Amino acid sequence: MATTEAEDPLANLRQAITAEVLPIPTTTADATKATDAEPNLAKATHLQFNHNDQHRSFPLSTPTRFLSNGNPVDLRSVFLAYQNKNTAIPDYLAATQKLNEELSAPGGLGGRVQNLVFIEKLDLIQWLEGQSDESENVKPLAGEAAVAAAQAGGAADIASGNVGGIATVPSAGAAARGPKQADPRLVEIYNGERRLGDSNSILRGIKPTDFSHVRKHAEAFLSRTRPRPSGPTVPASSSSAPNPALVSNLKKPVTRPGRRIEPIILLSPSASSLLRMSNIKSFLVDGLYVPPDSSSASANLLHITRLLPSIDPNRPLRFIIVDGTEQFKPDYWDRVVAVFTTGQTWQFKSYKWTQPAELFSHALGIYVGWRGEDVPGVVKGWGRGVVAAQIDKWSGAQGTSMRWRDREVVEGLWGAIEEGMRARGWGKDGPR
Image (cartoon, rainbow, N blue to C red; front, side):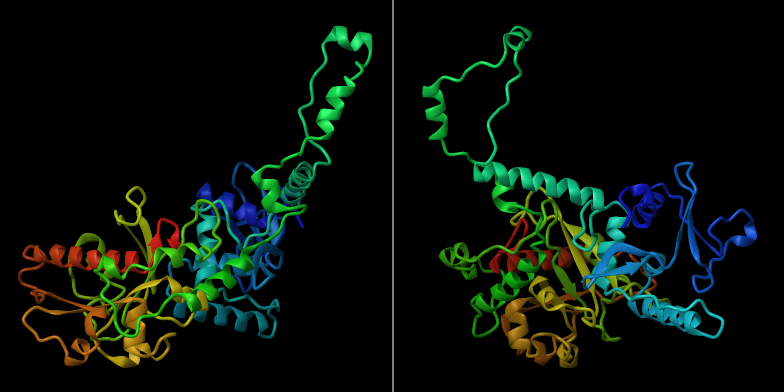
């Protein structure tokens, strides 16, 4: 494994993206002609970097420090994921399958690229673009690991009392007179002292330890031990907040410093839904409804930010919006805070909670329909765990100039989401 950033392909890729000088796929390790460039990753053998007035080349088959299920992901798979950072998951899967077919075809380079699940892909893109300096999926460089091990070992020695104290620097006169004999009484006092370590030495132990697995076990444990109401809850009532005595006894999921758990909002994949991936951002962020655009492919994962004063008055929360759960892991369900629905129960067949009454006791249900039309009876039957909102019908002749009431509806929905999150124990760093 590379010991410095200059020798590491993943670090070079991050630096190139930050410098906005993307690397070039080539058919040779020493590309000198324009014909050496090959944009097709099925034919390219190397990735050449030209940022910071440096020219480096790495084979696309090189394993990187990015791990998926504990296994290194090769540079070709990493670069393909970055090239498809803004594409929908079906398009990304199709690109992966096509590249694998071309690699395994007669005369191909051989090998396979790896498909990253959307959370791994999102984590990789954020780290490569410098949005995050830490990633639980990126293994530290060998040099960084050695430094961390040395620091942890020194801290452990302090905690155990093997070493410690403050070393003094003798003056020139004292050095000339030779070593000074310690006062026997002081020596006796020092021997009776208890050496204390700092928080790092106590928490880290004698070697660097990856505690990411503890978070997964803790989240699974908390999801089982959280009290579940017998029916739909009222998210806007402060009286439904968890018992403080119970919450204080539950351990908080382990998170990395500076990184917060991002709540998830699920959209209905139904074609009859008024809100789809193409227009949900305009609705929730700008307070403006526009018809969904079905003529062009839209991303199936979006990010929006919203300040929820009762949860964190200083920092906006970043929400993940998706319309499918195919790539969900079990612990993602604890992060779902709202589910948009059209009243069609087939939407919930792939969910962790397939029954509406149970689903909407864990997350707020939201139904959005046209103003003047009746709310479907099935939605009313789901109880107060579902909030129904109505917006003015779209008129192409009026456009957006007369849609001033959309903002009022959106603010009401955000208020319901905020109340529901607070009632279910969400704090500044995520669910308690």
